Image (cartoon, rainbow, N blue to C red; front, side):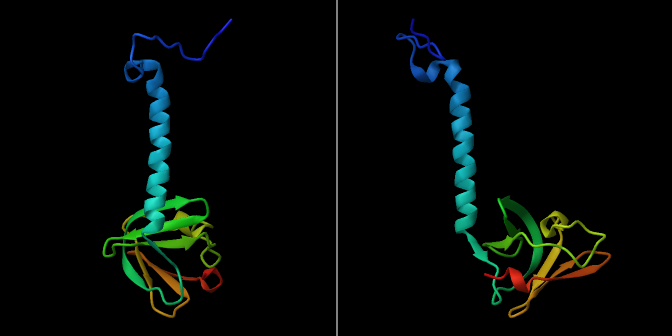
Length: 132
C-alpha cells in the first residue's frame, strides 16, 4: 500500500496543484528572512571605538544577540551586541528594548558612551566592554 502525504496527479502540473502552495509559501518565507538577514549583516558596520554616529533611528532589526540600527542619515546599518542597561532602572533591562523609532542616538569617535536623547531626558550608556 503506497500512501503519500500529498496526492499527485499525472495530468495536473505541479505549479497548479493547490496542495503544494503552502509548502512553496513556507520555503519562500524562510528564504526571504535568510536573504534579508544576510543583506542587513553585509550592509552593517560593527560598533568599535572609532565608530561614530548621530542620528534618528529609522529601523531596528535583531538576529539572535546582534541588533542592527538603521539611521535616517546613514546608508549602512550599525551592528550592536546585546548589552545591558544597569544605569537607569526606570528603563528596560536590555538596551535594545529601550530603543524606539524616532529616538536620537549619538556616539562620538573614541568614546565608550552611547547617548540616547529623548524629548524629556538624555541617557548615557557606557559600552566599553562590548567593543569588538
